[in-house]
Length: 443
Image 1 (cartoon, rainbow, N blue to C red):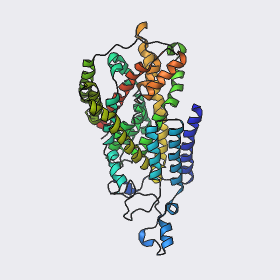
Image 2 (cartoon, rainbow, N blue to C red):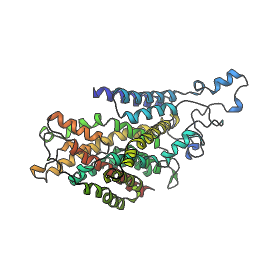
Image 3 (cartoon, one colour):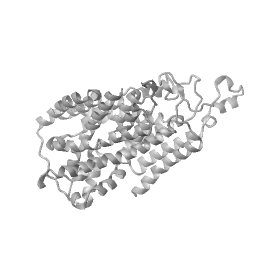
Image 4 (cartoon, rainbow, N blue to C red):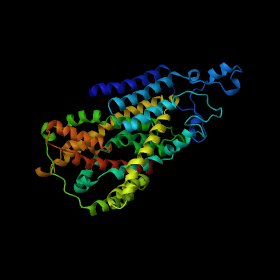
């Protein structure tokens, strides 16, 4: 069944590759896309301008329809949006993300005549979509997502066994490996840094960093960076949804049956005082290490403090339910709508998808291998099941669930979920710190 799912996604990517090659879709964006605050949506550069529209009512109506202004690229991207929705509904792959993103892709690829004052497109100044998209380009939505994640996350597993934080750190090797790979493929350093964060398996962090480094506005040594927010966000969320498909083969390949049968000692009970102190001290320490990640780290730990303090239940409940749900809807739709055919269908997007897949594999392997290395120095009673090393990527809680499922596959009584949550939440913190480091070096 997993192979069918992989083939479905690869089929969508193959369509993009075929169309982009067959129709010669350019890799470079039009100059008008440089400044998102002053550009109009470029859905069909050959569309007639208003004074060229015929006086005949029927002709004018036809010229304004999407059928007249459509290109092959528009239909390809609409098909991609439908595939996202299909994967979310049929296989329940991150439906809370893929349904909004998929429908957003469809919204963003409905062709229309631009520059006629209708203010419709996401890149058209003054449009509703453009205002909503500012939350992405200005990096507003990711910290709000982190607030909700902090409010719904229990850090007890990490607090009770702090050495599991090393697994979360080890999995971040996917970020820096992808960064180097992006440089090798010719991306500018800021673009490579934004692409690299896909390896952290953290959609909000990927959007936050790409909005700062690869926004189509910044200059790097006199060269304008590309606008890669849409492709990076789509790649990050796509592979997050495919965690249950990508990770298991890597986990089984790198571990023996004996290692997969390792039973870990039950985590100790964490007193309330430690739970309250952790977000405060954790924020101070990590923010001093990586001040550039302040918006993400601050909101993450603040949300967790709301959860653990015991006196702000209403605020914690709002953060982990209503607030994060509303932001997820707007974020998903606007990110999807930003992937217009003329912006998305190019060689850069295809390379980003390839790098994203490789980064997830490398990150998973890094966590598993480091767990095996740690076992060389641990007493037999304290051995770590290497399967939980794969949870070091910050796809919470999907990676932890994958470790649980793989553990139960070998031993129906070996429950790894609570242990896997340690490196899983450590991965969230680690990816935010890595983003801050990249941001400080590449701006």
